[in-house]
Amino acid sequence: MIFDEYLSTHEAKKEMKKTENIKIRKNYHNTFYFVLFLYAAWIGAWLLEKALETRISWIVSGGGQFGYWTFMTLLLWLLPAIVMIHRLGLRVRDLVAFSRWRSAFLWGITAGFILAAISVINNAYNHVPLISMTINWSFATSVIVAPVVEEITFRGAVLRGLMLRNRFTVANTLTALFFLGAHLPGWYFQGRLIDMLSHPVGGALSILIIGWILGYVAFKSNSISGSILTHMLNNLF
Image (cartoon, rainbow, N blue to C red; front, top):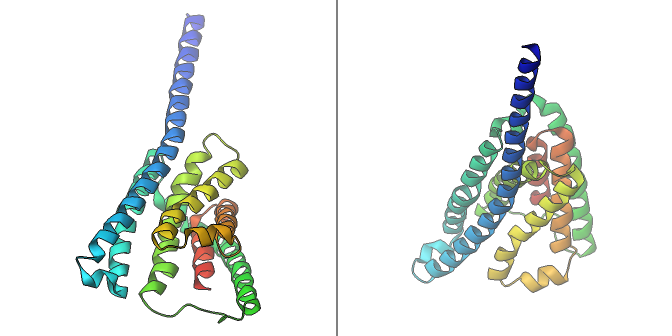
């Protein structure tokens, strides 16, 4: 009787472990499908924007660009990312983790100021304004909308999904590569792709390194609030 109960419990545990492994493998694969969806959706958003430029004049204005791209970012990045995060068994508020604000602030502000200092030094070396950002619609997109949405998407959904079956270093490197890939459609449609790829400093290589640093900040602070803060400070300069 006792032996039968032991076998029953053992089989139940094996079945649970098997089910959990299947779920982990499925969510891991879904992370790659999620990235492919982001790329396809973003290319579609650029194609639509170019088509609308010839028909709706206001869309090329600062406010029009802000409205269009904010809407597309929320629709095509943030909402799918939230769904992906829930599929991973997590919640956005758990990833933001305001309860760990001290760690997030320390890591976020330190990494952010280091990146900002590098940017300022580079601007000084190239004899351009130290702070090139002006307060306009582009500022709102670059310093507020993009850091929040991109960190939830990449350091939230993608990084966590890849860490299901990879060490942090591997998962973070893949996430940084995917983060770089998300910039390619924009560079192409803006006519800057070759320039950004052929001039890695301030271009593709810089984005890759920054993406890796953002993942490291999120991992060490155990909160994407830290990487959001770093991202904001980096984009400010």
